[in-house]
Length: 121
Image 1 (cartoon, rainbow, N blue to C red):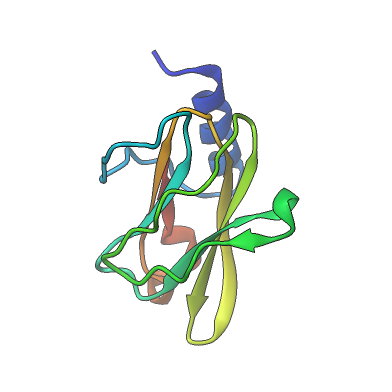
Image 2 (image 1 turned 180 degrees about the horizontal axis):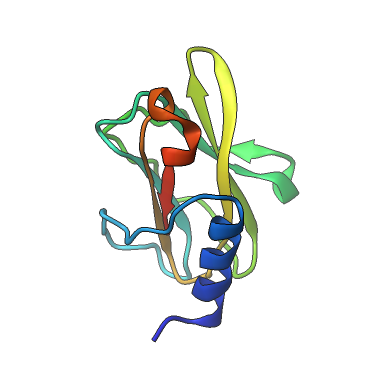
């Protein structure tokens, strides 16, 4: 059974026109939760996680086929995923952290249309 946070996250992504897919990457989350971003190896963009309520703090740029280090992810905290495609920054979605460790994967290609980009949380 999915938690209410996961259901709300799925609803937010669906409302944004983004699909909800199961995470393809699993690794040990830091004690107390956190967030990690992985970019699919077939993606044609790099991406970052951004924490708008932490002064716009961002991860280092994550290239296709790579994952970020674990960052903070308090339960209910808004986290945005931004893609960089040929110098253009594209907001490809956001989610609310569960506080239990979220591994997020950005999948899809901008050249195939941004509606084809999915975030697996």
